[in-house]
Image (cartoon, rainbow, N blue to C red; front, side, top):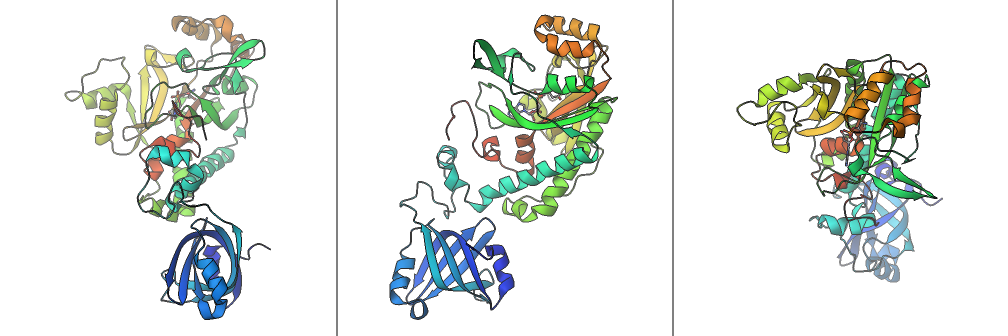
Length: 427
Ligand code: AMO
């Protein structure tokens, strides 16, 4: 057995022998006694080395270990007020499993953060920092909360193709790929496929998978590859879709708070489980809220500046509903010059967008044409509307946007293990 417990569990074994494994975080030598701070995913343990017990040779060997080397220590646990962690381990034996080269390209124990580029270049080291890991612990809990909510509402988890023949969300943000003799693209959204599944009678589906957008601009909230959480439900309108989404968000935050509270604390975040329903503000009402402060015409999308002002006024989660039809894609359900579409916001940040969909074949084809799209390219999609398509609605949520909000990190790259941005393809 490599180890008998983690650093987190070690304190439950007062007076007993344990074997713990991890990285050498720090070493302090005070004459005949030395402290090795051992780190694993769960926390830290202090190994107290006493020269007279462990032997002169060993004492020298272990205290010369480079930072970030991997070791296993076997020894007795002792609860003590003197140690910062409330316990120490008195090792009788230390196995050195992997020696780290020095100097490190990035200091794990350093208090100051390196710049983003250095961090991503050396991500495997950067991720060893407890506060960096904390983001991914929260991310995992949020994801689980969303998934459990959807499963509880009888959604089937599906996976749709990522190599596709057509654009969904606009032609300019497509990544072309070679598919043998044909031109293909990386999918921007499972939109068309999740709708086809409504025609296939799946009733409720969700997908958690990568989506690709060739975003030209390097911003702190755009990625070229992100995880899209998509839901689609039949015999449902925009309001039904919003209710599922807000419940999923509420549960996601509940999971993060209950399961990863200490990770949130490490990140300096305090969250209460939000109350639902979230406030619904129509596009027209939002314009009114902005009037006198931000100049914009009906039919325009909100500028960064406008969202900032709106976010200051509604300092919480909220929906913007009933958008001008021209601001939304061809697949949304029209209602006069408006769309039964919504965006979920947190302050000034867009988290998700969704809509009731247009399930009427003729009007869908007409709307495609009006947006300058050729229906012939969408035959595989449109066919599903010709032989019995139920009314349906759904939404897509960028997981990293949610992680960004809940963890409070300022750059979306920090929410992805290996981010893809305008210039980065490695690691
Ligand atoms: P939309 O294009 O608004 O809608 O995308 C949905 C959500 O995905 C996230 N997102 C991104 N996250 C990081 N980097 C990006 N480049 C990026 N682009 C989008 C955002 C956004 O709110 N098919 C529709 C959804 C639907 O109607 O069901 C769609 O893709 O959080």
